[in-house]
Length: 210
Image 1 (cartoon, rainbow, N blue to C red):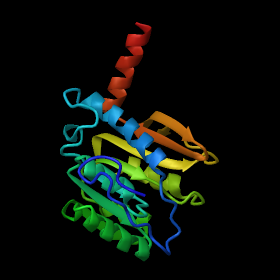
Image 2 (image 1 turned 180 degrees about the horizontal axis):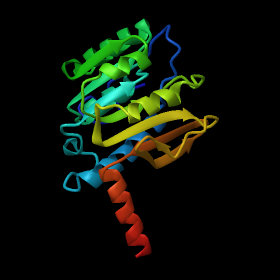
Image 3 (image 1 turned 90 degrees about the horizontal axis):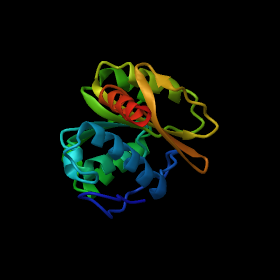
Image 4 (image 1 turned 120 degrees about the vertical axis):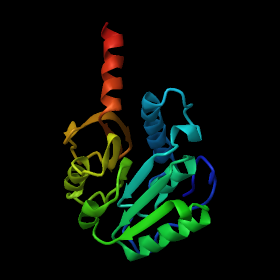
């Protein structure tokens, strides 16, 4: 498990030893961030995909953070800051160690405890929320709904949900609409968005059918 792009590219990440986490594979993580960057480019046409300009000023919440790999990947690519929410004490320790190893500790804040109870007190705005919950956790969609309706979620926001193909997810979470979805074996990555992303999607559809 490693950082795949940006300032900390190639740095190995520690996986929690005791926590029941399921690290995102490099293949899925690369595909996930490729989709996210293609959406970010809609709102920032002047910034090149793969550049730090695409991420500049964005704040991220890594929910069910595990090793912190997704939030750290966003920081490495140029995000301004990241909040890491994780219930396992062992995983919290791994996140802090990984932030230190990648030189990104000053940009990350780690919050332990029950994820659902932590959400209401988050500072905003959060531009990108990434979720990689335990596959057996049926409460994940409730947490996703809570994020979609949270006052700290930015107007132009993205929510990324990594989940099993056996978990049916809705087309909408509150005011967030499904923008992208890809399957990789048993793993599906679904991305929801609103604001600029909905407008860009509508414009693209009009260009196709216009």
